[in-house]
Length: 361
Picture 1 (cartoon, rainbow, N blue to C red):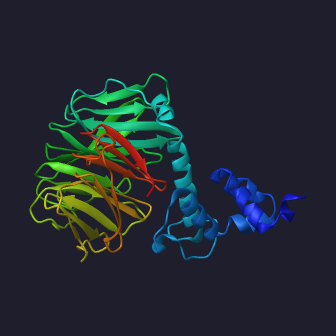
Picture 2: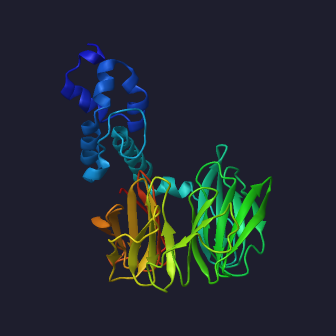
Picture 3: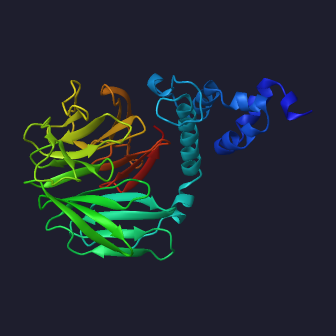
């Protein structure tokens, strides 16, 4: 019997045993019938729910016509999200043994590392780190023995934040306790400073939307907007949505019309990029906030008691809450939980409990 002659129920059962990427990229091209079946959004939503108990919010299921464009809100973005989720689950579900083999340690900073960014240049993988020792180190992650380039005195204070694009990075920004935000150029085997922006008080976070647009938060102000193509003697716009209190972290992406911030007031706030006005909705936490991150229409907030909150970025309405506990005694995680949101899952590094966790969004 030919594959295309199999009944629908049997075909769908066979699909469940195929890796998601092969199913989408290879199996779909066999014939028209398989293509139409595999392009069906409902199949992928049911598959994600059946295999991984994943239920996407309605706003993420897409409503635009089916094209091969993976833009946010398109019909296929939901399918790509389900595929990415399954690939992440497969990668992390085998055993911690496989993960342990992929981990290596090297001597880096002699102070606590507060800033880390991963990115690619021409297909090569790199990492930037900044720490309390006032150094910035650029790591080439491909060789067995890591190559690195170090800026010894990048700032005159602790380095709190580094921001750059994920892909084809030519420059990046760093924010330090010395009240300075610096722009750096990545040259051949070196890192060169190209611009210095004074923000009058300790710079706690910086987010670059591209090589020119920069958002900054400080110990007394946030959010500040700069255009680095012009002299940055003062911000183009500012919004003190947390009052005169420290604003610990900012996050946004180019596909988002808001920039999100967390502060000393235990509040998650959002500023409209176009008018630079505070949005009406905010989230007030009873617990201390650890970190916030946004990507691909997903906004996650980590609290220092081990709770992870997921919000609709348009309204700041709470959509989901996860509570991560200690495997040894069932107690909640404590301390800082650094998070990184991706399309396929959310990654969490717990500083105090020395955990590294990946969970499906």
